[in-house]
Image (tube, rainbow, N blue to C red; front, side, top):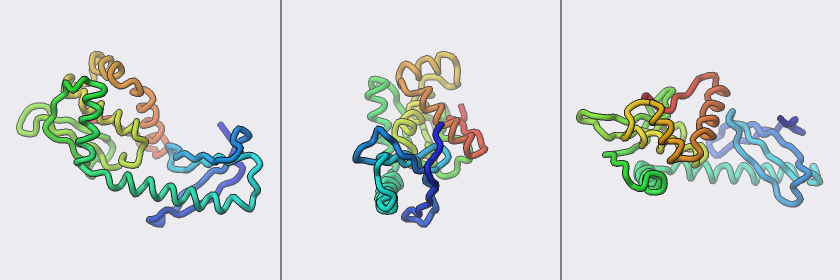
Length: 193
């Protein structure tokens, strides 16, 4: 754990207030690095010798980068999701998984995805739009998880073994999801099973 040098706040393009924890890092010489933490705050690491009067300009740059990233993620469409699922299917499942549709939905409260099996909606995958701005590797995990339900209807040992073998970042992504849920005070579920 680190102790931030100072806390700042910036506003994104939509006017939302975002908390920033600033930390000087002796390993950084010229560039700064930032990352979104599971609780929504940003950790900004700056070169140890960066003068204080340059911090506000740096934070403006971070806000601009954040806005660009948010715009890209907000523009993710169902067609983009379909293409992404096809790539995941090809890369991690040798294109052996079949489904009928995959789309973003806004009506999931705690679940991140669902996959129907049987009946008139067989093969329909829904992904919560709450995760659109999450790291790509976590979104990819949620997609891979739902694709795996086309092979295994429940969370059996075979399901988890096959998913871990197919998508190597499974446990890391699950840790991220549990961390976000913990920070929000609400457990998040990968899906409905």
